[in-house]
Image (cartoon, rainbow, N blue to C red; front, side, top):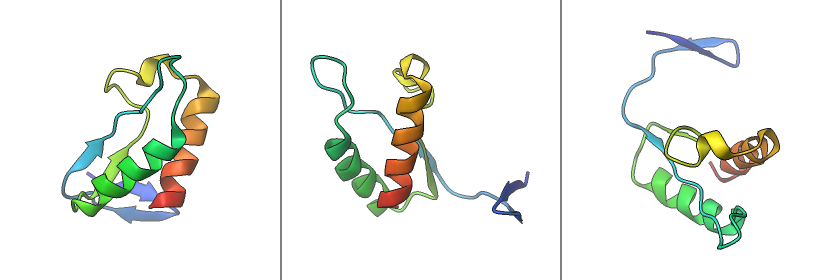
Length: 77
């Protein structure tokens, strides 16, 4: 299997971790905690992360929330 990333074909290898989205009691995303969590997951040596997927909350996130989560993860990585 190959995928295209920035016009380059690469073969993914290793674990791609599906990360959860930390929320407060009002179901609002806590982006500061998400940043810390993503840093920790990356420090464990994963090949990549999957943001806003079917780990439970993914289907209930808005498009804007998914975009901001993705941008936050990219900033941290």
